[in-house]
Length: 476
Image 1 (cartoon, rainbow, N blue to C red):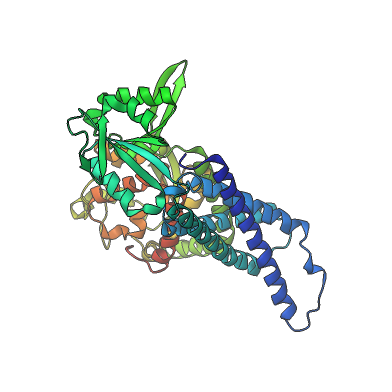
Image 2: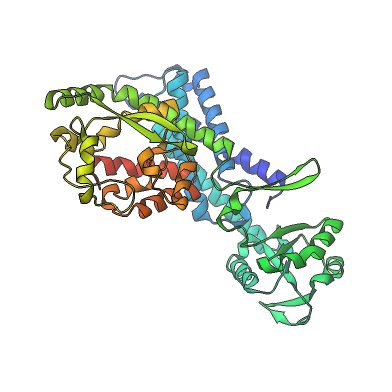
């Protein structure tokens, strides 16, 4: 952790207090608005009832948990106010969705929508003000030489140069480099990047004894990792914290875990998101949002079903057999948009396929019914998949599901998209899915989503999906 435990506790308490204050401020602003209405008199609303106390307490806890998930309490020394503001926005959006879902499920009492909107606005403003004050305070303290870390850098290569340049651009991070160690000690005494080379890797003990160091930062290339054993052993003996900056793990570095199992050191590497808490929150979001949508969209379901029945013969739903998470097959449904027997007609249309790869797509497909074109234009044919989301076979956001007939034609690298639960929408949806004519590009977007997955990314995709669906962007 880059910051002491007591700093984390202070930050958590500050965020919880600010969230509570936001709710109280929103509540009394809401009460003031009610009192200003004609015919309203001063009443018992001056006091918060138990339902509102429970809601504001839950909000404070939820906000702290989400901030913790985004890493706010562990990396603040290396962040910027812009980055922090983006996290605040994500937290307020995600937290509000969870809070609304909890209110809907548990029904603690009457909760005004105006109050919720005022709370979101107040919370966004006060959290931004809180973080800005903390940043200004930290900058003020570090400019005066307090709350700074003295570090020794092991390495003198290109990676070291990039690290030093980054540190120099961010003085308020509070890192002071005392010097460098090079592999062989041939350049001891020379000045590089504004500091002296203090010795070779083998001189680590004398350097530790002659300088008051907070941390040792290793910035050597992968091929030199075997040469730093003496540095690691010396730091272990002296009790000095070590950090390794390496490109060895590449993108997977954020999904690596070190354990000791029966005294055996084990490094576990995951190539897909595997953090249980955010995945649990993602599942909770799916259940909450889909439950609300299924209730609100029930009349739409009935109208679409009636339209399909009146305009073409055949069933309302099309049964869709697909391959999901870890290649597990499941059955899903869409509103039928094609004539009965469309699958049998597909082989005659294969020469007209406009997609490169195993997926079949053509514009002005003759099998599509008149109402089917409308449903596809606005993605209404996919609404029955909400039931698959509720069942747990799919998610609101995730890679495009694969048909069994498509999977057998997948290349090896394309199959990794099946390592994550499929979704109704994803990057391909908001980037105009029918404007993409190469299946490789489609898969690359799915893999980009997997490699960069976060709850914030899910929310961003969902928000972009709404206008894409309403405008019929990229659909046909």
